[in-house]
Image (cartoon, rainbow, N blue to C red; front, side, top):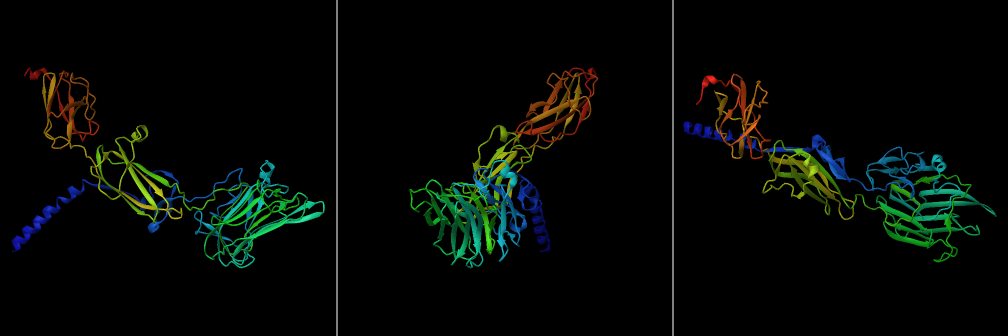
Length: 510
């Protein structure tokens, strides 16, 4: 019984002895996690962000407005402190205790205003106005179209909380008029109030006010947009893209009458205050001198983004790709489309631009594509709302390197009169392509040119013996041989042992 047990154990050990050679045929390349995605060659509307297990994930970049030198007057992203106007036209100061929080509605972060924080104060930069690009709140400025946009997540919604405020003064034949632009909370709704903000033709006092129709909800983000069309006088307030209130700022408050344009009085201080006594979060504030037709609602770009990995070296010509796997998180409605392409040389991707081929991550390839370099492209799309986007945490490529043939053994060199006959044993490899003979006048330096069979190296095909003729008698030559596979002579294996031989007339004719 003990003998049978020993035989069985010996059989198992014999089987396991073969496993390393089998597994050695396949190799893995892993990216993500610890290597910080070092194989990424390009991003397009994508970025790296801390994600799963504290490592970097690939995700869609955040959508946000980009400053337009002509249209954008104020642009606050609230992505870092101290806060700054991305349009570069206003200085920004924060007298209170506002802070940055990583819960942004557009972008990564937003600003949080605690109660009685004092908000932030914006003032036109003198250096900008001196160069002829006057800001909207520059004293004496007559406006045309304008749009105000921002995101809010209120904490309390107490009556009287002020979202934004501007005070000014303008001179008239009857004296000085106080001006006011104000947005505040009343009964959980947004109220817009304008006092002498729109210039009446005969300088009469003119006040306008309207209130949103929908109650806001504490702790919930909402998008607010106020826009004015200077051609028609239409002033419209939208909440989350839905019109809440519309009025016409004209001489008789009806369409078709004389339009009253916004005017910043010459006696104004130009100071603009944001969230001076508002409690909650705010994000992506934009004041522009255009009538915005398509406001930005999406967290991620609807057109998606892409990332390209590689070229990834697969060690050898003709290496076979077994599978490509991605560790992803795809919220409902979002998508990731994956593609690959291969080339034998790194620069072939630029010169030949091989076609991208779609693949299903994790599935084995059949047939298996081959090449010495691999590129992978992933195209990421958000869900239909643009709020949820997919992520990639890890990439794994399984491949089988096409190892070149081993060095030939049994190499022999027999000298003759003006010649040397070389022979070796057959290399047992299924994709054997042939052999190369190297010769030269120094050990390890195979640059011979004496033979009428050609300079070193000489491709002798699949023959296992070859005779170099027209060599110089009395000269010591050094020889070695290497095998190559069906990928071509560029994919040769190691050199055999080196032999030396000296042709001589002493050997005579055969």
